[in-house]
Length: 137
Image (tube, rainbow, N blue to C red; front, side, top):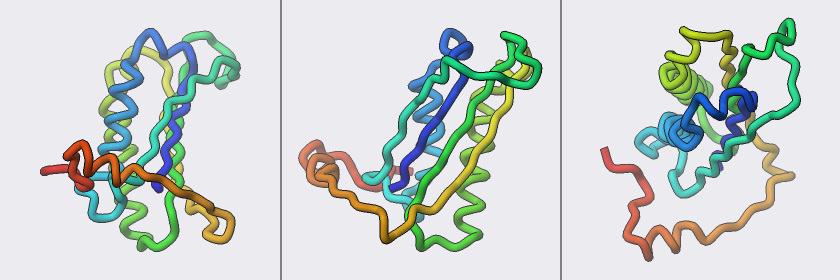
């Protein structure tokens, strides 16, 4: 963990670099790797083709970021991390927001420890690739 879902209205696909948005979002959450592990990050973009926003005008768009994390962080750390993500996404989408109707939201949830099963070998492959587990400053 963390797992990151970036949902966005499909009418944004031609106007944003989705890969850039995903990287911006993940980098903002992970930061220096002190709170959230880089090797645990899973970020995905989810275009939403069917949606109704406010009055249904076709120019209306949205980006919603869901951050799911494991328990064990302080409320201050969680709030700071969610705020970092919100500010980064807002900055990334500032030009679109200035030119058209856009809603941006960020939500953080903690996964239930008793119902959370996982395994990965990502750290092994990071070592093989020579990629550090913590981002370099």
